[in-house]
Image (tube, rainbow, N blue to C red; front, side, top):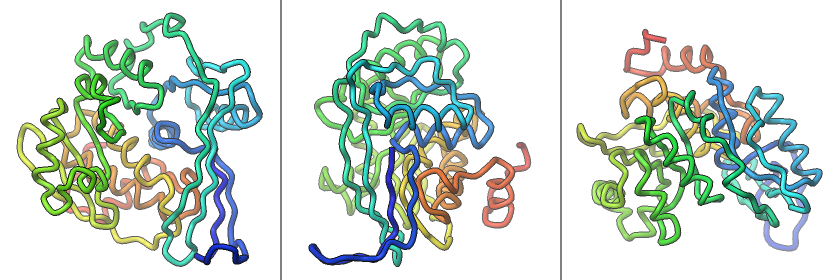
Length: 293
């Protein structure tokens, strides 16, 4: 759950007037799934929430978006995660204060993986690592592509070996000392297992590498109100495109367009567009052909 205030940037100890306030669900996969649902996809979400009021809010919003909650586990006594987010009203950039969920244990044996038979793509993070690994194993048997939203580290190497597409933010390249050599940063992702590597660059666009080569795209120029959830939106929209059989370049540009539209309104989900809205945006702003819809 995200509690978002828009206000000017101030020094510690000062007071500022809030110009806008939004309370809505957030999170990596949650926001990505809402993006997919708005685009018209049928989506299942597997995760664990506490049995608290925050969890009730999160669940109600997901269900209102048409996302299946059949496999969302409510952990007795658990506390659901939330974030307080300050958005700089002048730049649209944000600062996040996050409380992770606690007491969110679960038993993998309670999940019937026959649910995976209807999936065309799977998006995972590493918050509930064992759950993501089990889901990835379930779909890889059917040749379904697995997309990951995570920063590689020693903890998630087991999951990365099951991932087909890793979409990482630019600070991953900085973290490994390759911010000035994005080609090498992409190669480092391939070395970990994924056949397709994407690095998002914020306002500078994105770079990618797959079996057919490497490419780069520029971000769409829009009037940014709030960047909260832009990366999550990119992941969701990319996965949507992959489920439709699009190539990497098309998935990236489509995802960039969806994220750009999102950034024109406050909150991580308020501005998430429908498919006709995205196509109209691309008709005006893209050089690629999106005639097959």
